[in-house]
Amino acid sequence: MDFARESPKFVQLLIGIVAFVVFVAALLALVALSDRISTGTRKRKGFAGAIVERFRNRPERLPAVIFLFPAVVLLLIGLVVPAIRTTILSFKNGGSTEWVGLENYKWMFNDPGTRIVLRNTLIWVVLVPLLSTGIGLVYAVLIDKAKFERVAKSLVFMPMAVSFVGASIVWKFVYADRPPGQEQIGLLNYIWAAMGGEPQQWLVNKPLNNLFLIVIMVWIQAGFAMVVLSAAIKAIPGEIVEAARIDGVNAWQMFWRVTMPSIRAALTVVLVTISIASLKVFDIVRTGTNGNFDTSVIANEMYNNAFRYGEAGRGSALAVFLFVLVVPIVVYQIRALRQQRATR
Image (cartoon, rainbow, N blue to C red; front, side, top):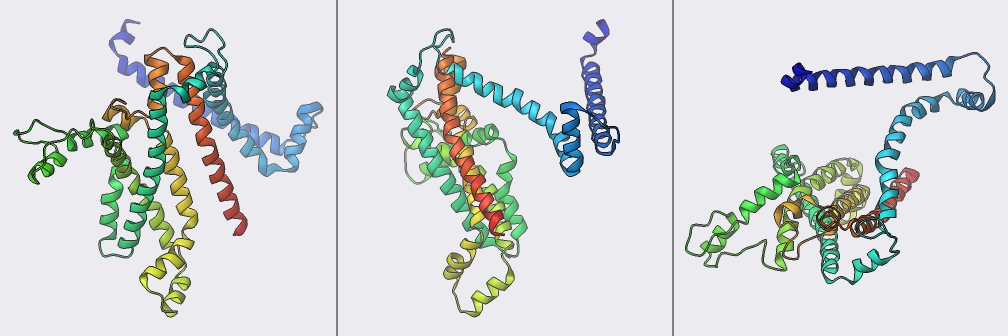
């Protein structure tokens, strides 16, 4: 015990080794179980026997079911059960002791502060996907087959390697301000002062402070959009491009009549993915303004109510509402992917 206290790193290493051994043993057990059921010859009776016989008739499904089972169990424990519990809490009061029905949801739409939160979230969901996808698409088209294409792509994709918190800290330095007459350390205020303007508190002044936070998200997501759309553009069959050129189309017609229809599937994926990320945005707002100055969004307000204000019911209601907003987007993406597979 004394050695464990004096050597915490050794204990952590030992725990890691044991966990790895247990994982490998469980994996080998799953493989052995799959092989035994697939190749076994003994006749099994009852419900278990019926299941075994069914999988023996369709042996290709057995490995998938066995290896997906642990993931399904973890999904139930880590997602389904918390979702049910959160939904139940959304109908209770702050102390999670009394049923209040739809009061938390009424508060959500009647409270002036929360309406500002919903408005901000809507602005994020509209502007971030459009701006990120638009910038990524234009950039992907402009640098396609350029001489320094790889370097240009790396420069735009690089922000994707930075966490939302790290990016927010970087941009807080860009937006930093000092009193008039002092040297400005923030890049934006330095340029603004050089043009004769007064230093501004960009993250404080309403309502533009929301737009300056959105810039951070666009800066990160534009690289993702550019990479996906660039790959889609390169996947356009050369015969289609060559036929369009023979027909005498100009660059603008090539973009709208050939490029855009060909990358529609990738465009949908990018828009949906960034929309979901915008709905769930938390880190940027939390780091940039802490949700002050009318910049809070649903995820940030959910955290505040549940963990700072002791209003678990209201926080849960916001979480459920956020889930309801995300589900239609996910359903749309799944349906779009199925339609694409059906047309291939």
